[in-house]
Amino acid sequence: MRDPHPYRHPSRAAHAHEHDEHRQRAHAHGDDRARRLGIGLVLTLVMLVVEAVGGWWSGSLALLADAGHMLVDAMALGLAVAGARITLRPPSARYSFGLARGEVLAGFFNAMTQFALVGFIAWEALQRLLRPHAIASGEMLAIALVGLMINVLVLRLLHRHDADDVNMAAASLHVLGDLLGSVATVLAALAVGLLGWLWADPVLSLLVSLLLLRSAWVLVRRSAHILLEGVPEGVNAEVLLAELRGLDSAIVDVHHLHLWQVGAGQRMATLHVRVAQAEQGERMLRLVQTTLAERFGIRHATVQIESAGCVESGPNCAAR
Image (tube, rainbow, N blue to C red):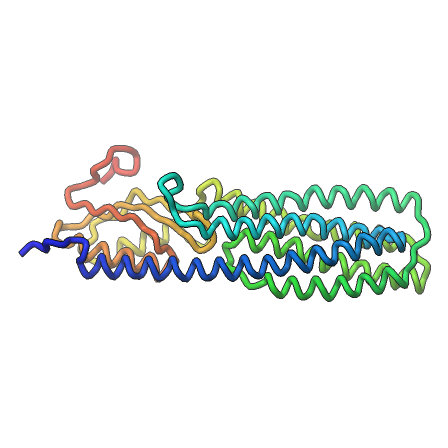
């Protein structure tokens, strides 16, 4: 007898329940990320003021450079907070996936600002090397140590994030830059105070900035990959196809596969599964969706079941 309520089918109900639970977990995780980013923003703003005043008072480029890092970081963290909050908005008629890409855009922009910051510090370091002047190393050291402690605290708040969360990764990169800048400032203060090496201040500032270039490039490349609908990192499309084709003898072929990522932890897939008999479609649908979720972290998959060959034309179906 045909079920008069097809949407109450146990498999569909179970899948809907699992999808709701995943959405609730993602929402709670997003709230936690936004809270940690907000705390980090407040601490960064406080230290920005301290280092800017201290750098002007002591004449230290390293402190001013670190204050410049802090200024960019404050903007970066503010953007990251906005990105994390935007991600929590539910899907709508206009944005069917929600605004999860907002945090990817934030991560991309924040990574790009690192390049501009490195250029600014390099220029200032060159000017300071050509025209060195006296530095109040004692005040510089005291402020640098406070900054170091603040940066360690903020980095501990932000370091726990998913591998594919480019928004948190970009924010953490900015804070890591501040942490390295504080270490360089401490070393520069010691070198100036104990050895009289005025050149240590700009040189160490420049070295720290250069260390961040590679990490900034990696983040730009990762976020651009997501924005360009690239296959999620860690997923091999050929391996995925081979595994799905070997799941069950009822599966004749799997084709027309598309893989992409919307935001952190939101991997998507669309694919066609050809089965030997139409009656096997429901069972194969559950098997494929379960495998994608458990083996590849893909919990949002649109699977088209076919039993009489590919129903679409094009290169993906030409040989089917």
